[in-house]
Image (cartoon, rainbow, N blue to C red):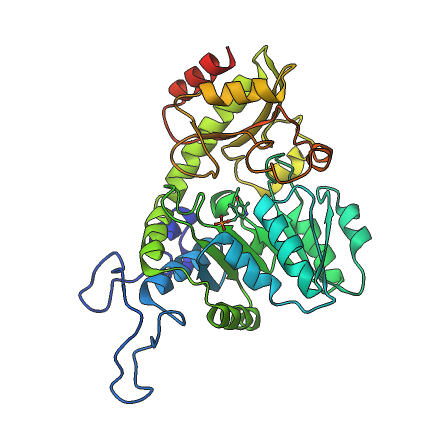
Length: 384
Ligand SMILES: *Cc1c(COP(=O)(O)O)cnc(C)c1O
């Protein structure tokens, strides 16, 4: 049976993997080397220099391609460096349409790095497909989606976006960090490029910063590989090993993230002191139908607003949490809480962030895989 025919829960463990050639090691060794001996000039065994290729990174890249149903994976030093490589496919004068509640670091990369080089970005509420269409013109080359969005949990219809992209001959890239391929496989829905901050759920243990791209098309893979090698933001062997180890338990972790996420979303929604809960699993969520059709579950990311609460009240709640750790990032085995207005979204002017719903009292949870009773008890004592 080829790896391609395996089901998802087996691909996470076996996809693209083979025992190591030297001694049959089941886990790929950490090839902590920059270079490789050649028998004659150009006489090597497939690896010449570790920016261009490293066997531990190759093992990770093959696993990434397998779990996203792609043909080619590329592992980078961070999620943002993976995005950086995608934007470098473009030329001055080109335009990109993206979401208006994009991950803050992605917004900064687009606006403060690439606009200087003459690439222009439009940000719209992409859950409304017509809003995307309105911004497309002859200069548009790329649609950049993130779904569910951070921290408002909007869900964008990937299939509808891909039909729009095909009609106008655009590339469609999807940041799949929040959903992971366990919940959503964008390449199967018509996307050209899937991007990950593998720092989050794929690594899953808050111990690495890693990025990834996966594509189906050979020509696109070649162009991205050229940029990866030419610019050099590659994932090192140790981080490749740790991320690969994380991927092997992705399906069991995600199952628990989803179960705990659902229990906590429902607990918060029924709490007298909570005003609003953002989680795509609720039937009342404006994009619930899209979420239900393109996702296999609703994940462990939840945002909420306590009733009548101010900036200071929200800060007090997150400070009181004891099992949830107050920290940036998400997707690890441990539960984290964040206050977007003062943390992840502090750099966005108040009026701007409030337009997309990121109000002063909003709290974001990355629900981990601890015992859910402990997590609920912790929220209970903090909300009071
Ligand atoms: C964290 C994150 C990124 C950036 O990835 P890094 O690994 O931190 O560079 C991009 N997109 C989303 C949705 C993220 O959560």
